Every structure is written in C-alpha cells, then in structure tokens.
Length: 176
Image (cartoon, rainbow, N blue to C red; front, side, top):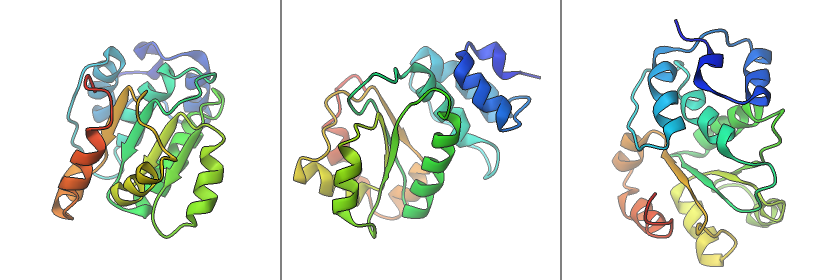
C-alpha cells in the first residue's frame, strides 16, 4: 500500500488529493509517480478508471511554480472529450497550488482560446490539430516546455496524428 505522502508531494498538492478523497495510490500511480518525480521518461499503461491522469498530473503540478509565466507542460490527447476531461482533473489536482491549465481543442472558438492563453497557463492540454493551429498563429510557444505527456498515444497514432505529433515535438526543447 502506497500513500500519497510517501511520494514527496508538496502540502498543497496533498491537500487536493485529500479533498478529492484519494487515500492510497493505485498500482499505475504507485509505479509511475516516483519515476515522473525523478524526471525520467516513461511509458505507462493501465485500464480506464485506474487514475492515469493523476499518475502523470500530480508530478507535473508538484514541480511547477505558480509564478511561472510560460507553458512548461504539454499534454496531447487524441480527442476534445479527453482534453476536457484531463483539464478538469488537472484543475482539481492543482486547485490549492494555483497552477494554471488550459484545454485547447477544435470545435471551440479559437478567439476565446487566444484570450485564455493571455492568462499564461503553465499546462496546456490539447489535441494535435488545434495545437498546430495555435503554433502556426504564434499564440503558443513551446520553448520552455519541460514535460510532454502523450495521453492515449496509441489512439493518437491509430487516428493518424503521427506527423502532427512529430511536428509539435520538434518545437519543444530537445531534452524533452
């Protein structure tokens, strides 16, 4: 049994976990959080509903300063529905820390997204196509990204997003 306090998460992150009613880490969280906290690359696979978003989200939130004014984490998802779902979960986990996140996806007014980007989110959760749209408009810069998450990478590849993903990854610092 692993409790979240064993992972070295800061108090404001632990406060959010407690408020959400999480008592012990799921197997994917217990295995991946220590690896992610150390900054190493990893691949995680688990069934739906096992807490994968918290498994990658908690280390992201933990390491971001609320004073950061650049995008430091990028989470790519295959669908707008997943982007929204991940953004909601990240928002709950970051609630007390004040980390800013934003979902970017097609089907939502791009002007509204551009306005939201002016609030300087540190975490962007988006679909490849809309991310590229913002990159081409120069409304998103990935120069300061420290962490990239490909959520449901297999699904994105099955949907034909390989070229888009590669184009986006070329724009993040090489060590990521």
